[in-house]
Amino acid sequence: MCERPIGSAITPDGEAISYDTRGTLMTRRTRGSPYAPQDAADTEAMLAAVGADSEEDLFDIPESVRFDGAFDIDARSERAVRRQVERTLGRNDDLTEFMGRGHYDHYVPALVDDLSSRQEFLTSYTQYQPEVAQGFLQALFEYQSMLVELTGLGVANCSMYDAASALGEAATLSQRVRSVSGDRILVPDQLRDGKREVLEQYAAGPDLRVESYPTAAGTVDVDGLAAALDDDAAMVYAENPTVCGAVEESLDAVGELADDHDALFVLGSDPVALALLERPADVGADVVVGEASALGVGSAYGMGMGIFATREEYLRQVPGRLVGVSGDATGRRAFTLTLQTREQHIRKERATSNICTNQAWVALRTAIHVATLGPDGLVDLAEDCVRLAADLADRLDDVSGVIAPVHDRYHFREFQAKTDQPAAAVASDLEAEGFAVHVVGDHRIQVCVTDANEPEMDRFVDAVAEVA
View 1 (cartoon, helix red, strand yellow):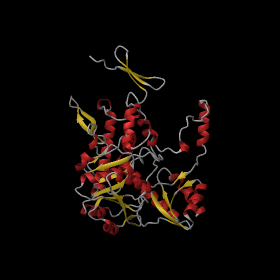
View 2: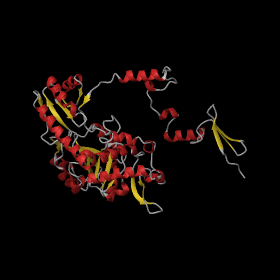
View 3: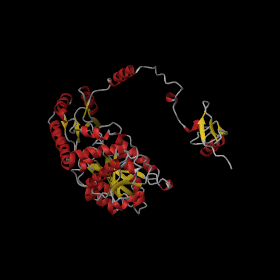
View 4: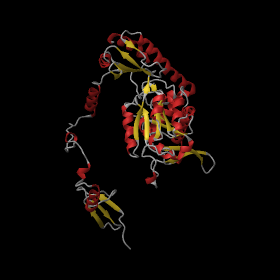
């Protein structure tokens, strides 16, 4: 009988060795890993297959950032490190932001931090073992249920990376759920650059074309969209509110146009706006994507948490994971990961998505925040977003040299304002006064107000009056 190796080790020289039951050396490798074994011949064959001469050729790392074997960091005590970090962070500008365009800051109750920091939540990565993760699975199920209620659609997954990746997943979904040969993804011409770039990355795989349709006064130009649509359209994307904060008034028309051409209608929004604006299902939306991090996370400068909800008929094509309700052996209600399409585990070649984490902890925070607000509190917050934007626009419009809002529309959280002075100069002067705004044109800035920066509105108006 042949002996099987029962142990392995890595020597100080980097050799991988294994032993049999009697401790006899069986194999010795100077390359590779005991966990991903390959010898020199394997490496040479793989390099030949991809047309590379060496492993170094697989990477394009600029010389300026290559690791040269030394970090050049002097050893310091813990106290010295803390002081150095504090000095470094102290150089940050202390600005009050009136910025939005997809990243919104709302007050996050202390309860969210307290509950989400419990170790059973904070240390759990993926809830593969339902018998030990019932609490977390239930919280994710409640999160999904909240999105279903807000969107009116039948299915919501337990979160995505961010709004941009959710939009990209919707584009690939359009190729799987519609009986069309179209390859055109139509988006508004004012779509934020970063979101469009992510969408184009997703579209490159299935050879989809991302094209723009016109907008007017901050919302969809329905006639322009109709002219852009044909039978090659696979998906139409619109936002409510739009990137400039305007409330979209023509969603019914957009939905009808998409349906007439058998294109998927995808709507971008967020949980706060969904509490007040038209339900996506009522205007014909097939998919809702967006950013949920406005609740539970706040302005996190890079961290997002995307939402993805769709019709129940597309259940088997939903990216990411779904938490469902089942029953245990005693008949009690139990929660489990019902669907995990992102890997297909044993059929990876048939995977419908490459999403490989589900942002579970961030989704948990959003669920706790929504539950803390309750239905009435969520609506109140949404109404404040309309009231505060209208109030601030009126006050800025009274400032000499400023016209606000630019678009004759209802606005949610944010709006654009025209300035007689160059917008870049106005923004720079406002920065010197301690405020930050977006520059969106030669003579146009964008201003966002929520409950988080509302206490600074008076000072902000005074600063605009001073610099404009």
